[in-house]
Length: 264
Image 1 (cartoon, rainbow, N blue to C red):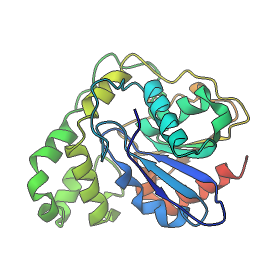
Image 2: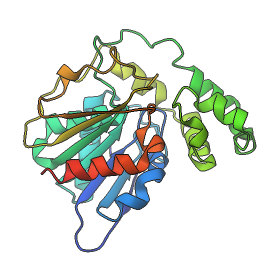
Image 3: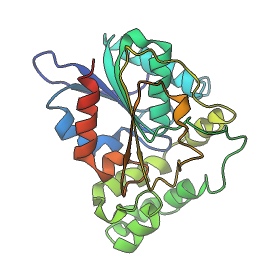
Image 4: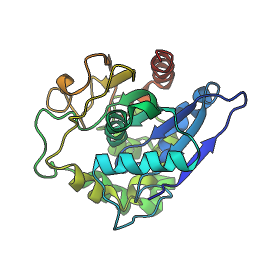
């Protein structure tokens, strides 16, 4: 399955950088860092099946390895055979799978709060899984109005980050619209059950993992098992940061992406 993608090209044959969003999100999640990144890369943003502009295809397997194959196939369709990867949450897990599956294609990996690093795999959806999506669907029609108020942004994003009050109106609205429309949300979640990342990424692929110390979605130590990533991984923890580091500290995230990309 080819995924809907957006390419932001830069002159001078800049290296390609792929951005993979998380479960219930969309490529709009990357707006906070696009301006800085496009100074250095040709950027490719994809929408996973049932997310953003990619329709849900019932024949598409939604486990991270299968999604990694779909992403690689999509990149090949653009004649891009070697590229850097940045992924958030589920997108981070997919990035790791890509590094293990086809390391010759991956120039570097930066995982922002990557999923799949469980101490033990989940056997069922964890409590509260549906809350964010139900809330987003229920307020969908009034979201453009409601999110102009601080109380509404707090209700929707206080569990995402301790810095929720710094999020822009556009970031919040994009996030609410993305999860409300994500037909692939539950299929992706169910496809992660009883699994975790256990691939082997060779030292030829630089890897950086960034977590926030206030990540309530994938908290330490239950969801941040360092033994599952390769030994050469740079493991970084941002203070006062939640589950979407690119929203909390966009400039710091760009710095780490560039540092990782330049290791190759």
